[in-house]
Image (cartoon, rainbow, N blue to C red):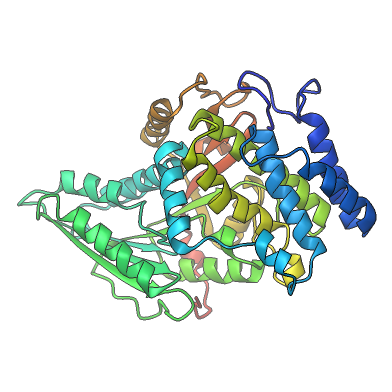
Length: 416
C-alpha cells in the first residue's frame, strides 16, 4: 500500500521501492519496543526522525506519525514530552480536518451516500403502510454530514398530496455538537419544500436510553451504524449494542465498518495491521490533494495522525483497543445476533461508482471484483450483500445492510 510514486505499486508489494528501507526500520523499531529493548528502540527512533517528514512523500508522512506513536510508548504519562507527542486537536481543528477530508476524498461520502440509498430503498418498500414516515436512529451522528443527501432525496419525493415525515434521533458526545448538528440540518431542510416534515432529536451518548423511544405508527425505522461499532472498546459493548438494535425491530440496519484486524491481542500484530491500513489512507490522499496542500497536512495531523498515535497506545492507558474486524468476522457476528443480510441494490453500486468517478483525479477506476492495483476502487462482495471502497488492493470501508430475523428476537432488556 505504501508508495513513493503515483505509478508504482505499494511499498509492501514492490521490493524496488525506495520507501521499503524506511518501512523496515519502522518495523524493526516496533519489534524492539515489543521486546523491551529500549536502547535499540531509541537508536532506531533517532534514525527515523532524521529521515521522516510531515511534508515529505506519503511514506515519510505516515512513518512520521507511527514513529511518534512508538516514541510515546517510551514516555511516562507525566512527561511533558508525552503531552507534546500526543497533543489532542481542538474540536474546531478536528471539525475542519473532517470537513476537508469529506470534501476532497470519496472516503466518507462513499459510506454516507451508500448507506442513505439503502435506507431510502427500505422506506420505499414500506411506503404503502408506513404512513409516509421514516425514523432514523443514528448511534454516532457526529457532525450530521450524512443526512443532507437523504433530506434532499425525500424532499424530491414529497408533494402536497404526499407529505413525508423524517425524524432523526442522533447520539452525540456533547451538547454543543448536537445543537450545532441540529441547527445545520434544520437550516438545510428549510431550503426545500415544506412537504417534508423534518425533526431532529439529539441524545447524549452514555446518559440517554432508547427504551421509551417515541415512534409513529407503522413508521419505517432505520438504524444507522456508520463506523460506530469500530469505536467500541470491548466485544461485550458490541454485543449489547446489537442486542439493543435487534430489540427495536428496525426495518433496516446499515452497517459501515473500517476493515482490519486491529483488535488483535499482540502489539506487533496490531501495529502491522494498522500500518497497512493507514499507509493506504495516506497514499490515497495523493489522489485528492497535492503534497504541499495545507488541507492535506491538517487531515493527516488532526485526524489520521491522531488515530495512529492513539491506536498504538491504547493498551498503555489500560483501555481496550477499538474493535476492527474483517468482513467475514462481523458477518458471523451479525448473524449470531439475529440479523440477516440484505442484497445491495444495483442502484447503490452505480451510485458508488459515479461518486468515485467524480472524485478520483489521477487513476483509472477499478470496478472489478478482483484484480487491479491502482487507485480507488469499488467492489461487490459476499454475493452482492456487501460493497467495499478500496485503495489499490486494500479494502478501506465496507457497507452492508441487515434486518432482524423476527422469530429470533432476544428477550433481554436493551442497554445503551
